Image 1 (cartoon, rainbow, N blue to C red):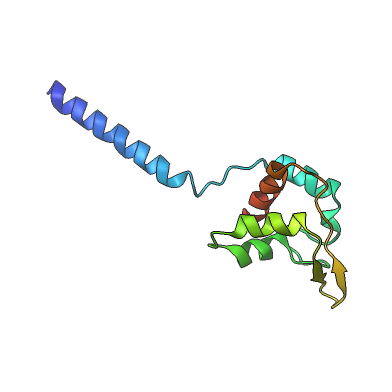
Image 2 (cartoon, helix red, strand yellow):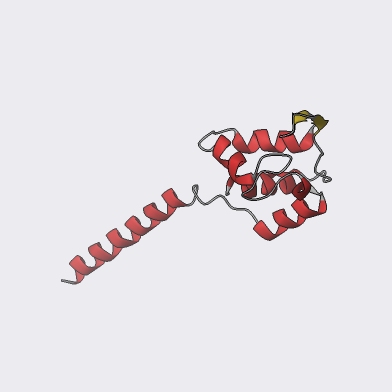
Length: 117
């Protein structure tokens, strides 16, 4: 009886650990408060909002565009790191503003936050 209980407990612990290991990658780790602060400090909200288009696409639309793409984070970080021409909703082409940080972790955090929308 004791052996049966131990086996069930061991099996339960292994099953729980396996379930958690599969769910962790889906929950990308980022700090939303820090990402929002950098987003606001860099005036990103002038052109982007969480769910409504402005001069640029909403964060929700951007997240949908890159959903399921393995290189989504890398693409967004590059977009925040290099001056690129972007076409606004009114058709005007402008240089996309860069995130004012040399720390790649800051840009990665913002990219993960955007993709969470």
